Image (tube, rainbow, N blue to C red; front, side, top):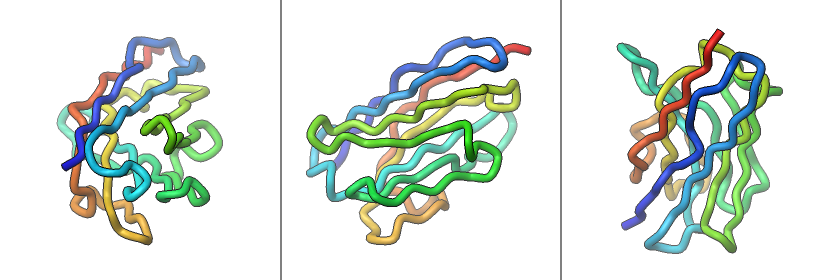
Length: 124
């Protein structure tokens, strides 16, 4: 069992930055690839970014490439999402999630554990 707790959400103006953090507890953090997803009102939960177990491989959805950066600290059991140049369309609840697959996937059903989410609101 892995428990995930997100933090760092809030209200920011367009063009601003936020840094989300996800703290993990339970089974060895380094055994899991970690992903970030987001869900806007009335929409499905969409993939944002993923990082491999050791942190050497990352992948992003096209809409955030060049603006968002995912990173992890296995010594501190944390994963972060640095979000720059935020746009109103980035407004959503952001979730971190964990999966044990060697080749991390980008589909929500591939993830075993989820946090409770943190709200990000970008005003225009």
